[in-house]
Amino acid sequence: MTAPSSRVSRYRVERAITRALAYAFLLALAIVFVFPFYWLAISAFKSKDAIFALPPQFIPQPWQLENFARVFRETNLVRAFFNSSIIAAGHCALALFLCSLAGYAFAKFPRAPGRNALFAFVLGTMMIPGAVTLIPVFVVLCKLHAVNTYWAMIVPGTASAFGIFWMRQYTAESVHNDLLDAARIDGCSEFGIYWRIVVPVIKPAMAALGILQLMNVWNNLMWAFIVLRTESMYTLPLVIYLLNGEHRTPFELIMAASLVATLPLVIGFLVFQRYFIRGITAGAVKG
Amino acid sequence: MQHDVRKNRRDLMHRMWRHRHFYLFISPFFILFAVLGLYPLVFSFVLGFARWDGLTDIRWLGLANFENLIHDELFFTALWNTLIIGLLYIPPMFIGAFVFAVLLNASWLRMRGIFRAAFFLPSVTPMVVVAIVFSLLYGQEAGLLNYLIARVGAWLPGVEGKAVPWLVSEQWSKISVAILLVWRWTGYNMVLMLAGLQGISDEYYEAARIEGAGPLDRMRYITLPLMRPIFVFCSIMSLIGTVYMFDEVFVLTQGGPGTSSTNFGLYLFNTSFTDFKFGYASSMAYVVAAFVFVSSLTILRWRRASET
Image (cartoon, rainbow over all chains, first blue to last red):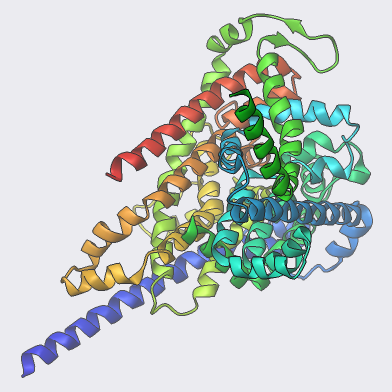
């Protein structure tokens, strides 16, 4: 009688040790991964001397709150924040609308002539690397007089093949055909069906795609560098990059500006994390 | 016969008209693709055979751009650097992402949301900011990393504790870029792998447990094979991401010291928008795109071959 129970308890002990090790491992690495954020946050509250002090200060002495007042006064950060917000909102709204509409069409019109060939074509465009088309897209935008406008940042990348694929997968699985048929019989217009029936159901997938698009557009430096020309149009990454490049800007202000540019997405992600993970998971399971 | 063809065509037109909303709903993609995808693609291909600075007339060169490319040392340096940086950061990133994903998928784990957020947050941070913070941490004299190395050296006999020239030596610059990339992209791959793990039905594991398979067997015969599509997706994304990476090196090292961390993406950008050699840049982009395309197909073949 004693043998099995001792085996069970040994198993329990082993399991407890494994789990404790797993927690220790995850916790240690989580601290390493979060540490640069901590360093960013406290550096934004330090004086210039404190940022480069030896030994390094893990807690600012003193807390220099005026960094933020100064960065708003002495740089065009407010304008850049405004520009970034307009561009991010426009880009995400347009991308979600176009991708979900096309995804719905590909998922729920199985008998439309040429559907499969058209969908294969959409997927094929994923193979085109952005680097190849960088120069011509710039030339096209020049011709359309879109350089140095919000449009140059908003439109490219909205009708993404990846987004359409994503929305199609989710729509095909989660929107029931009976619901669409019932709405059609009731005389709902095709666009009305999309707007009132499909969109509410596919919200998790839209949240996930929205965060991915937001990450790209909010953090984009290269394209902003190419198409934005005057200071009044600059986005946050571009302003911070340029402040960092010209050496007369006090470094503590660059850190404060960096914190301002980072917080919106970090907070947004923490708030919507549940939605985001659920949306990603749903897309991958079906994919 | 003639009659039949005409009837079929009318029938097709009729069916297309009945599905007009389908075409209407997908048309924005095709219009945008024509203007910002197809036309640029053709234009860029044509430019590969010409010299153009964007202002003066286009001059045809034939194959001269491609001949120059073969003799362009910096081009090959950039490809070499791309390869080395990729080899330095992709394996640890992949292994880290997979281990995190497996642990975060365990049913007994608490505080899952906190761990997930901690690992994923680097991916939502503006690259400029990441590079600025890392350049602080990498500082030669006052950087935190060198300070910690010195402290460890003072405590532990045998450890030298010498300052590492993170960003100022040609030997270390690639490693510094690679560390930053691991930090930034591990969480992103973790989320993709986590999604893949959650898609594996519990029934497989149940069945394996009843058959007496241990945790290692379950990993080897269930998890790894079923995760292969996700691994393939992550591999192709990493390949493309490494070749065309720009922001990371542009802000952290500007490709230096010397050309030691200039990767292909940065070289392409400099050729295009610093030197304004649009023709040369296009020929270069096409050659590398062809290489990336072939590599992606090879990765996909590996997936198919293993599915039999």
